[in-house]
View: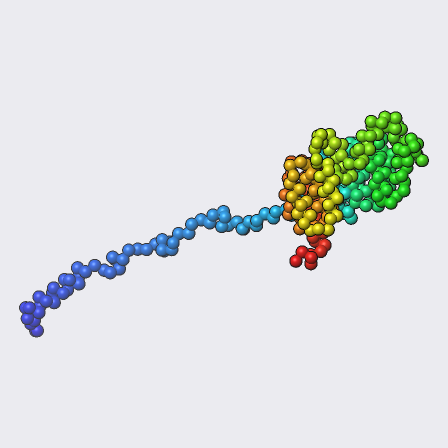
Length: 308
């Protein structure tokens, strides 16, 4: 029998005792829940789940202009309907404008009907000749005269009949509208109609009588407005800037005349300036600005090479 030395025996026994007292490595390791090991995901917000919103497309200046004209033509106010209708004459060869003007021939207000006839003449709408001939029999003399004037603009000689009646007191054919209305026997009424027809086409865009009532003694606006109308044909490019400045005049008669002159001038470089007056407080100015904007925008689109 092998007898170990006492010192060796003590050493072995101590080692065995230490091994038994040492805790298991696995028992000290904390238990990890697999669900806790992965980071928690925050719930998706509504902005993350929904598709990105596209920015709203702003209306073009043409869309704004048509909206203004259509709203004016349907307004409850006669003054607005008349002004919005008359400036349609600034839009030649435009089927939409022609249809709007023709529809206004049936308006219950003579101011609107006369503005409609004037617009159809200004836009040279030969397709509207039959409707204008019917309008020369309108019960209101101002409408009949406006229709006659439009027919002459369209090179239709039937328009002379009404002027013949004014001069002679008799009409060549058909019933006498002016006689039935008592105009031929009332110099004051005839003068008023003459004034309306004179100013109603140039430069006051169909609102001549209103302009007459607005003008005060010593007011220079009629002369300045007439000057603006004449300048519409001035070839000097500096005139465009002068008319653009006049469009900001404090007098609405000047603003309207300047905008109409810019329209007839046909220089698209003034389009941005014209757009500033689409929200003018005066209906006559706002509607003229809308028609002018449409006309200049059409000119700009028809000749893009010149704008480069």
